[in-house]
Length: 313
Image (cartoon, rainbow, N blue to C red; front, side, top):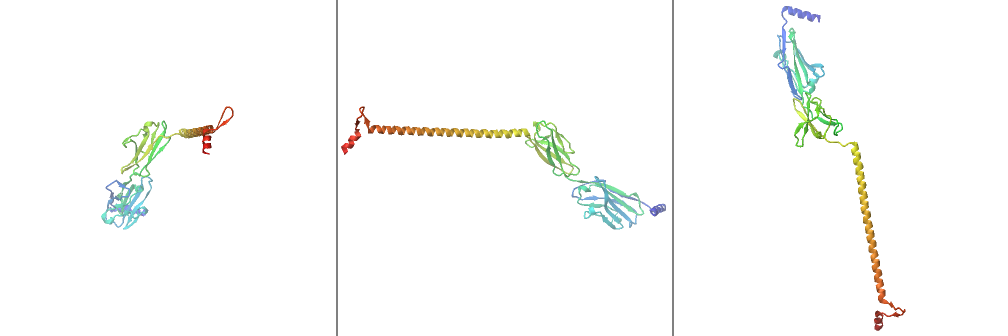
């Protein structure tokens, strides 16, 4: 280290050390998921360039950790493991003065700051690096809607809406749908960042269908839910008891009607039987009267029928 500092001082004193200049035309870039991004970096230095050194580093916006993307030294290059088969290195940077790289199949995790750092000994002073901030855009995935709380008049009901993916993070908007699917403003208190909406005192006017819209710069997607009045436990028990009592009453009514019909059939049968017995008895009595007759003195007299039989004999 001491020898290097001494060499720098010596070259500076001799007027052989020049200032290097590294620039990039764009300070920030947007790219969609799966797309490619060109990270431009050019530099100015004096020949010879056989000691040219180029480094690309990446720092994540969320985690903040940095790692090496690309390294070039004396026509020997190395590519960081996450970028193998995805990175296109610069062609002949020592003659083109171009250190630009291209990264394909960009993912949300690739969003962050990329820094191009160039050195060419003895040109070790000046502006040696330039940075590009890259934002990877992703359309929100279909959000999931849910209802929390007792969906009854006068109760607090919470509606939630959330997309698992989306870059930048999506905003959420709740609307109420009419019967003709027209959108109307929801009456609850909604948070566009979290997607949570509170309906603090649910009324009959707030039942119906609701839609949540999750959107960002790339696109949007929606989900729907139905806010329907729920029946409480007490009402359910009452309904069950009422149904059972109704079944019992119907069974009793059927039994009563059947029993009365049986009684009527029994009485009708008895009446018919009695009438038949009376008719038979009357016929028998009439036949006996024609066969014989007894006088008041007890002398049996022949009937006309008996005389006819004697004549024939």
